[in-house]
Amino acid sequence: MATATERIVVQVTASQKRAIANTAKRLGLNVSELMRQAAQGFTPANDEADINTLLERVDISTREANEALDDALSFVAESNKRIAAMSEGKA
Image (cartoon, rainbow, N blue to C red; front, side, top):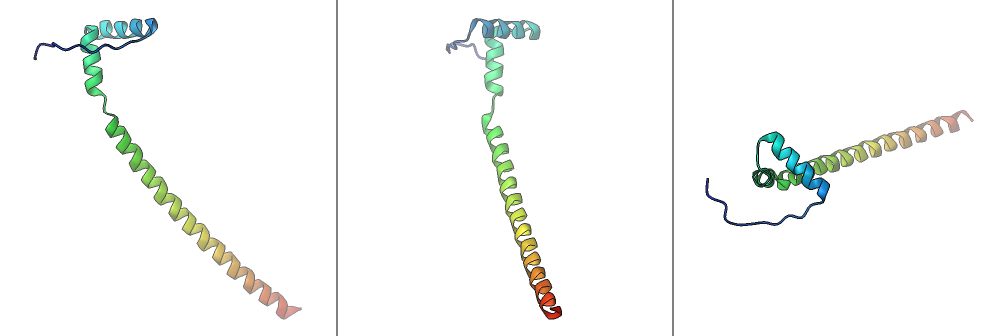
């Protein structure tokens, strides 16, 4: 592994610093290594792609549900016309 020569300053609260230090100790890492691994493992692009896929599925499902509702409403309207025609014939 290449020797680290660059510095990134990250400001945290005192309680966050304690939590990070405790996590590093529990994992047998120093704080710098924990922060490097955490930063390198962070991939928001994957999360964003998953969310976009989910939104696309919701959009498709919404369109399909709207079409099904439109079909049902058309069927009910036609049925009401038939019932009205039958009622007029009996009157």
